[in-house]
Image (cartoon, rainbow, N blue to C red; front, side):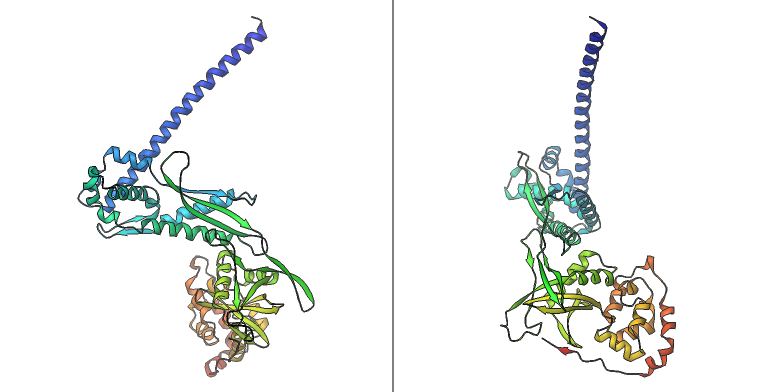
Length: 437
């Protein structure tokens, strides 16, 4: 055989041999990896069994049953992209990390033993143990009657799965809002408990992430035509819920009592929400928007229609509404201390605070209350409380970033010092805004 041909033949034979060797190594590695995961799973499963039972009942779980539970185990949530053509891989990695952190930091207490187990451990091994033992008891398998009695309290704790699913729903719906933008796309994440279709009996949760196009209209206000975006959301993969506001809440009492007015936002309003609620994430701001429209508490002040903006039960500001051709358009967002609000007028009456003062001191941004020591200053707390801004103080305490605290309360108090005598002496009633409800 000639030189080049001999070399080629030898190369091909060596290549084939190496390929077979790699296959054997790869196969062995896969088996070792599977065995490692199995051992870890069973180890955690036994730890859960110890925590939920007494008198050494975990020893009743023989190797055959442990293997059965491993084979029929619950797997972690599987995330997939929807049909919107968007690659969500980076976002999915972030959601998974958040979900694992959430599960690791929440615990389930078992009264029988007084022990606590993280939802993370219950999520896989614990839920697998519960489901398999529950099934054995339900089918009245005589071989496992003793186990059914030993783990009775654990088996009858039927809200384990519900609590874990609640945690998954909480994280996925939060991220659906966080990834949503009313002017670009509304994101939805649908969570389902599914069984495998490839013959394997185990169950898992699947989360499908997809998005919807925004609903956009053109509105003309003060001679300017601009786009406005419908306020909507999707909860756990539901069809889009477009939000409306009660016509009567907006002062349109000539309409039927059950009449609803669609709510839209201009770019300016979205930008001001981000700028003034600057320590809130996107999901929290959107949640506040939906919560505020749902509450629908409006006032008429200085000729403007203002819808109160709430985070949970704390009023933080106002959405300035313009009624245009049968829809409610949010033009801007005003923090409580911002110019053109009843609270800013009260600040002006108490100590003469003007628009330029508020802007100079950054009192029109929520971070000034959450990232500074204002909430630790008695004089300032009293001042803002008297002006109707107690919820800013409350939220400052609730979200106080102690590791990033800026100590500027004394500087603000010094800035106010020339008004301090007025502040101590005056007892002014709050202005009475005109109600439109």
